[in-house]
Image 1 (cartoon, one colour):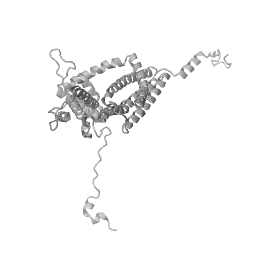
Image 2 (spheres, helix red, strand yellow):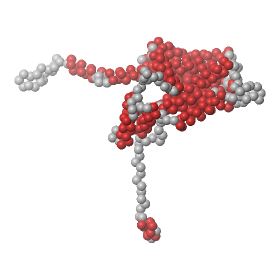
Image 3 (cartoon, helix red, strand yellow):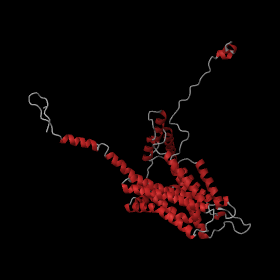
Image 4 (cartoon, one colour):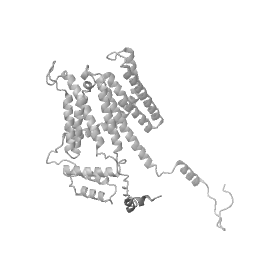
Length: 421
């Protein structure tokens, strides 16, 4: 058999194909990088949309649902869905054209307001006859915003400092430096936080980033007394929301507030089941129940039963002293009601269910705050007893200390063979 390399001189000249060395795999380089504050911007987008929907519905109800551009058959009607689309476009243009955290906050706020105006008219997109007053519209709107807030929670968990790879932390340090260039400097807290994100100080890239962060001028974190601080609308809303959050946190930390929240969270399942049963029996649901209405009624009943079971189990564990697990279960019951039960509540009661939704949000806030405090107490107790001996070791030590010691032999220097009485 003839050699293949001899038959092909080109292959003989090159006996082996040159193998390029494979790129070393960088385990810390992710497929996608998350922007700093991504979860906060998603929450700002969602909450600005929620507030927009509620304000729009309240205004239209008080004003008698006026039509901008004239009414009547053949008249020009400019729906606020159009303004919502324009505001979403403005938010995207801001994000595409400007740099810095201020631009991201402004884009999230503007886009959220636009999305609220757009989604408020979802009834006109899915049906022709009722249009804006389509009954399931409230449930569809609630589902959209619940999905957005769930997405923000998921992104927040993935972008927590302990979960980010080294490449993502370095990218966030670069973003902090860019934000410092845009805003005229960095505060000491921002600089220290960005320097702490650099994983390997001996690497050339991290050293270059550290030099850039150190070279940026210092910016005071508090406004100067000589001039009034210039803040954007998004920044003012962020500051206002943080102040409200601190004030509500003080109320949530009060012992009586926690007690009332726990009691109501446990009774909530009973109240939901009793209310649904009373509405079905008396027929007070408006309009009267039809076959299509039995789906949300049955789903609300199932969610109420699940909520009640979780809350009762959590209350039992609280009585037994397992406070951490009990709080988790009661909080899970409130989350079940907010993410599932309230969807069917809005389907049945329309926007009259906003009151129940607000009560559920307050319960979630109080229980989350108390659960965080309980975790901190558990870590504190663990650190306190970390170096203390276990009960078995203490028992053995006490027994050894209480046991009599055999007298030593005077002449031979050995212990006496006689047993100790």
